[in-house]
Length: 144
Image (tube, rainbow, N blue to C red; front, side):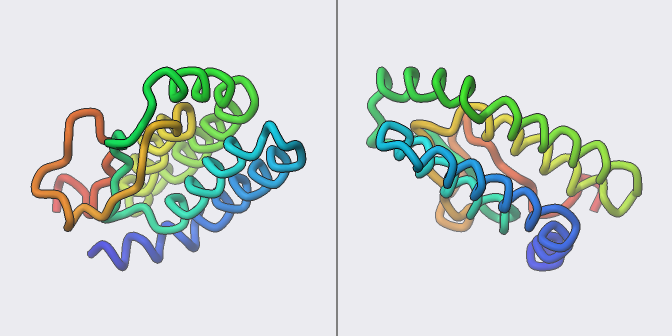
């Protein structure tokens, strides 16, 4: 089921969202000070391409102070419009019944687009239970 949802996601919105992240990453990497922000954009681009079966969890090696500062700057520089893109995409996907699980995934990824610093992407199979604070894109809808 994950593979089918990931393929549908990729075709309907994932490629476009990933392109937006890559564009943001390239723009941010133009200056030396923007390289850490560009790195986060590229990380989220990979997550946006294949989100089902993976989760964005708090990193065990994060520096909380730097993560907070990075997230505030990220929100101002790129996070708000990337999250807005996820919200618009989610609304468009929820128009059809088949697109509802994809729309819900897009809404969950909007939160990840707002504050990506201090988080890492992990495969759900490697986790016994998603940790608190994890942004998890479900592998299937709740009714299935």
